[in-house]
Length: 163
Ligand SMILES: [Cu+2]
Image (cartoon, rainbow, N blue to C red):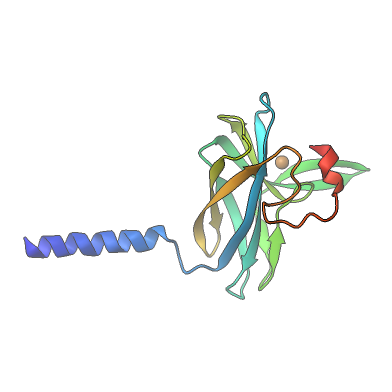
């Protein structure tokens, strides 16, 4: 009996360790999303990803229970027309960072199960090639927001008019 209890304790400890993921090699901060209008079926989430391993990492997938499909997107300008394009991965340079933001890289939330309302916090799972899964939360800001809640927006970015 005693051994069984110890085995269970050891098992739950290892599960606990596993759920925290591998040693953090990517720092996730400044996450935010922009509120959507009632009829909108898609939204976008933004984060800043910083490689702390010194070897770089790759964002290979993202998912959220609030969207039926989640894609990694970039904006590409072809013949003067800027469009969103899905990409399979978003690389994070060694020792550097990438900032997902409106008009650039973003996590596309497709088929929203509910509108993104200002003030709610949505779960986001980020899957990295090396650092495995990072669970994060994304605060939803107002429809005119241009950055995360602690973002110092001393200047108005052009993206403000494009939502
Ligand atoms: Cu997109």
